[in-house]
Image (cartoon, rainbow, N blue to C red; front, side):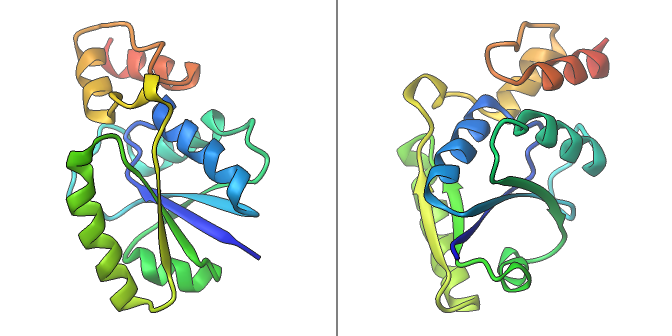
Length: 158
């Protein structure tokens, strides 16, 4: 069985994240989108909201599951018997940090593999930070996020 985890804050989940999950869904039997609870980042949406938005955004991906976690992703991998951590790369600037994280995760959990996936080219510039900023100025984010996320952002900033 191949089980993968795609961890992050997903604040909010974007079309780039959805694309990564769809790609991972073709490679792995089960792919968990693992929404981080304990984070040093201050999030716009609370954990329950981020989970609900992720579930509605990923509803069309049959083998995608949304869960939350608190702590190390390697501990979650042990609990789920996952053998792969998925990380998305938008640009070469992401690689240095992600490469270091992959090495640390292998030290913490020998045998875990990190697989880097890139979103479709037309989605590679999207980030949750930019989506939140555009939405905060009442900009149209419909091309960057699922409809449920756009609605939630509009409600937050109205």
